[in-house]
Length: 374
Length: 197
Image (tube, rainbow over all chains, first blue to last red; front, side):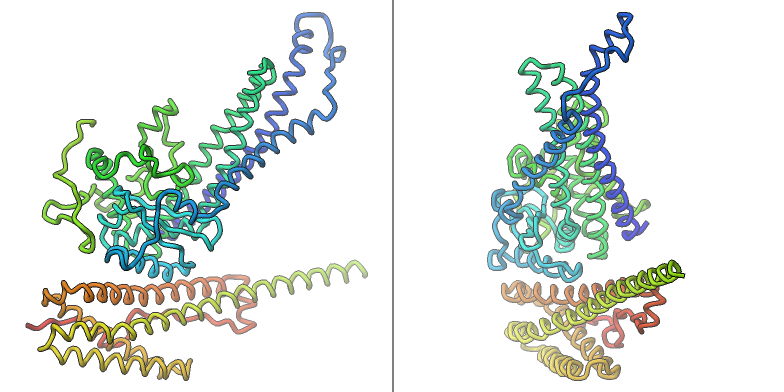
């Protein structure tokens, strides 16, 4: 398959997943109504089962506006949740990047930043995109990058200092092209909309637990159950959409750079960091723990900050992969290079070559050691 | 009779609306290719602007290589002249060919200069030179990407205008398939850079 095929497939699957998401929301609305109807019917059904009464004799009369209230409340929560989430990011990508400690990249600061700005310009020409604000996370030595935009005017691309230091020009180009695709395809917005609906379903669950706390568990528990199921299914769908967008961004990067080895080498270096977590920790105390990344952007990062094990512990689920926002590095590398080519991990820097980017400063990294954790 | 009239006019109206939509889409795609072509020119200008600075810095270190430097300056002058000739008379194939040839000569001369700098460690380490060579490398990439973006636009336009049934409207209104830019056309540009010591 070529990158054109991968792009088409990722787009098609995104649409399928979005349709499933819409059906899910409709299903939840119907589900809540059915569950509450069942609650009303339970005493009558019990009476029919344990006495000689017939169903017609115990027919239930719903309170006025029963259907309208049920559908209305659920719809209100889902849409309201989406609205609340949306207003969180309405201040724009630039605001978000600044909140996370990013500053504008300046050609006068270092050659590496001059190079980074040039790369952004080059790829904007290649993609025909409007130029986003290019920023740097100065204290972050891990290998990462993200892009965020609510409108085209406040689009921002942020790379970590580690990415500037450890990546060659071609590799950094692969990273920037990947992030540019997220902007180009409107992925921030898509994800925020989905996160909003997920949040709305979470509100439904909370609403149910409110009822339970007030002692009305007959109403509360079914609401909680439907809310929780819907929320979990929505999380899984949202993650699946996010994974497809990652594939799409990788394929876009190949289209614009026409150089699989750029992004490919970055992913292989990330694979090496995954195999040597001690080295990764030396660069940056766990990215997630350091709080450098907010849940608002973790799906936009080049690499997943949550390890599979972490997700596993958290969710207590067998196949935690389907809640991951990123495909595995191995899957991504296989797609970037095509099936038959070499795809072993690449050390972050060679023993002889102290640092990769001649424009950047040497890095405090010792000999690689196997991790005792594995 | 009356129903027939309604059906016929409805079909005609639908065809007309469809025709207008196809026309607008093709027009937008063709304008985008024009814009992509203009972007190449913008990047070429950037290259002309960089060359004098590059030569000025290199001159300090390359006293015995004045020939190479002169060749670069000459090629830059010719390329700039050819580019303004093309802007004055766009669409003339011979002017376009001359421009492509002059660009090729400049590209070749710059390539030789950059290879030369590799063998002068002092020059290579010069801060301004490093900065300039990054800018030059970036400019070369931009020219390449601008060409690539143009070709991608041409591909999109050709796909849209050659697909059935849009091809009916396209051929009626004179939207012809556009040629892609070939990577290199001049013999000088294809020639590999040779280094002599």
